Image (cartoon, rainbow, N blue to C red; front, top):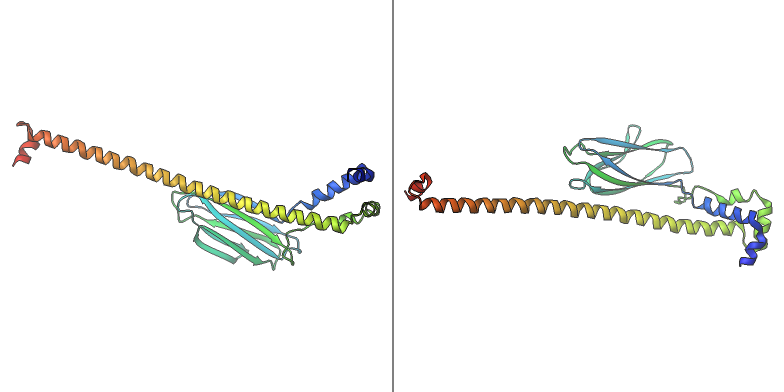
Length: 237
C-alpha cells in the first residue's frame, strides 16, 4: 500500500488530502451557547441564501439558570413558524419556503432575577435530508490527470467521494451526540450546584434557628431562678 501511494507522487497525495479535507467541511450545521439576561428578549439570525436547503431544524436546551426554562420562537419576518412557552428543551423542523433571515428568539422576560444559559443547534438539510452541501466529486472531475492516476491506483473519484461522505456523516453524528452530552452534563451540573446551594442555605438557616431557640430557652430558664429578673417574675406569675 505504501509503495502504491509513493507511485502516485506528492501532487496526487496533496490533492487527495485536499479532497478529504473539503469533504469534512460542514457549512450547514451550527451550534451556539448563549446567555439570556433576566428580563430580556434576545434574537439570533440565521441567513439562508442557498436554494439547495429545503429544511431548517433547531434543537435547544436550557443548561443553566433558575428553573431551566425559557420561551422560544422561530420567526421569519412577521410570521411565527414555531413557538414554545416555559420549556426546558425543544426541537423544531420547518420547511424553507422563502430565502432570507430566520430569527431564533429566546424570551426570558418572565424572570426578573435569573439569567438563562441556552445551548442550541441549527441544521440545514437539502431535499434528500442530507447536511452535505459540497459536491467534492464535481470539483475533482475537473482534473482528468487526477482521474487517470486514481483509476490506475484502483480507486475512482466517485468511490472516494462516497467513502469520505460516509466518514463525514459518522463524524457529524459523533459531534452532535458529544455536543448533546456536553449540554446534558452542563445542565446536570447546574442542577447539582443549585441543589447544593439550596441545601447549604437552609442548613445554615435551620442551624441558626435551633441555636437561637436554644439560647432563648437557656435565658428563660435562668431568669426563673433570678429574683430581680422581670422576665422571671412574669413567668412565675
